[in-house]
Amino acid sequence: MAANHQRYRIQNKNLTMRLLTKLTLFITFSKLAVVILFVALLPVLVSKIASRYTNINLQEQKKKVLEIIGKNGINYYFEGDSSYGSYTMLKEEYISLVLSPGANAIDTVETSKRIIENDTLNYRVLIHVFDYKHKKYTLEIGKTVASIGEYNRLLQRFTLYILIGLIAVTVIIDLIFTNYLIRPLGTIIKTKLLHRKFPFKEHLIPIKTTTSDFKYLDQSLIDLIGKIKEAFDKEREFTSNASHELMTPISILQTNMENLMINSERDEELQEKITGMMKTLNRLKKIVHSLLFISRIENDQFIITEKVKIISLINEMIEELNLRMEAKNIGFTIDVSQKVVLKNINHDLLFQLIYNLINNAIRYNKEEGQIIVSDNFIPGKSYTLMIKDTGIGIPEKELANIFDRFKKSVHGNEEGYGLGLYIVKTIAQYYELQINVQSEISKGTVFSIIFSEQFLSSASH
View (cartoon, rainbow, N blue to C red):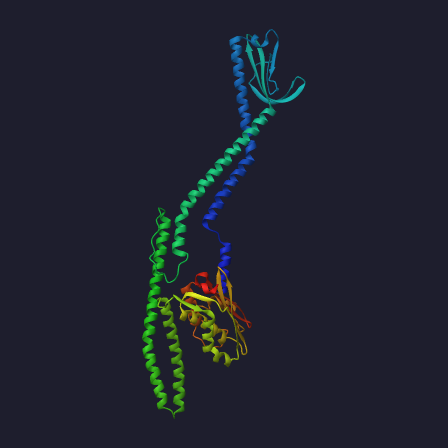
């Protein structure tokens, strides 16, 4: 309600983030981290896979060559020569078979250079030494490193595309499931916490969910709201009953004292005492009247279908408050549109709301001060009525509590009961109006009442 409350809500809204948004960001960034890590490791992994695949391919080719030799003989390759060599058109692969002077050795696979038709190329080479009819032969089967690199790049792109596709699918599935999982929480917030008008009147229905935690939270909120409503109803009933019960003895006491003053005209000392008692009794009567007024608001005892012209309402107040302003020589300026008409609102409640604010502006104003009532109309959005004074101001530390019941400012010396602004707050809550406060010590205070578009009559446009 107060200005610092409004600032807190704005700051809190900027600093907080919805649970769904946090989960969405976590899922997205965690998957992105996996992709980045995988991309960083992909060249090493693919290189090892490609190297291993090449070695296996070379072993397969070796087996085929040995099978052919075992079936058709070594001359199938030599054809009368002492050696054999063959390579593909682009020199990507080659086979070499020659007599070997050395002993049998374990197959070796290495990366080394070979000269093919005067071209020196890097190959991944399998070297195998074997016996055939008491002679040793060396078989070499090679594949160019460049062709292996091309295979590496192709494999990397293919793997990356598959990974990105899988990540995208998992992110979508995670988001859908997360949204489904926390949907009951959103329902709880929407039905139990947001747009709730106090006092709570509607019956709360438990949400349907299979998650036990949400069921427990929902039922706990229902029980808590029920207890708050029960406590509020008891307090409201007590306030209403007590106020009504107090009015009778107060009226009797007031009548008796008035009669006593008439019968004690010559006893000045007694009259002074009775006058003091009368002042105390009048203060008590005003408090009881205020409590009864609040009770009537909270019990929906006011008609809310009336139309009220703002300028006429303010002129009514000036007639009542004119003497008080003249006593302090306070200037009063009205800068309000002549056309603004509010609908779906009660005349007496709106009168009391604005009256209390102007009354405070007089009470806490300076001698020869000023009060300015102005407005601001934003078509299609809202209507704002502002009450500005040049009074003593309100300390910033007190702004948060000025609308509390029986809360009086310690900064001023004027008499008050701490119910005026509480009535303003009660009426504002009843109509869901927004009230902002700006104040500066020794310079004055501005109260702004904001009416939403639903209160604006067509005559206002």
